[in-house]
Image 1 (cartoon, rainbow, N blue to C red):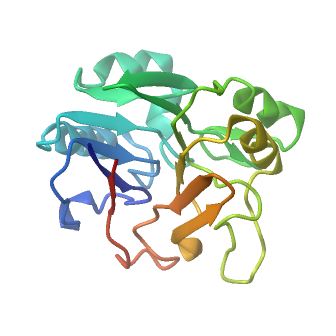
Image 2: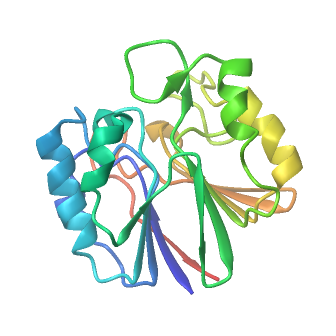
Length: 205
């Protein structure tokens, strides 16, 4: 089983070479302004990829997915995970788009109990967790060195302990890290100046 994983493409998906694989995973910020036209273009592109399965978790730029009436327009071959799971060939996936912070962003929640309720939903049987935000202290530093990840998500991961945790959001910290029994991947394709600087991550399971 080959997973092709990326995040933070911000409308530049047409310019990114996508390797062959079985499951194509996007961990959020597929658009920049979250408009209907941007989202429609991305969904058409994603649905048209040859991978047998497609998984999408929205990000803080992806406003279109916040409105329930828009979700009926998602192509049937795309698994949109908003506090939701899917089992694919024996693997348990769980996805959640929420990010910590107060502001006019999509899927934002205040730090503490407000965002914790979303992480409490993650099943302990999760093999591959997909969030938009990183946990606090793991591949979550911006250019100034400040950590912006979610503390409550970090606490939840001590209980869930997925084999893989895939996320994006913090462009500056694209990369991978092994900690305890989990592997962490910041899948951000663009850097902080929105230039394509990374490639999709390929995971062979």
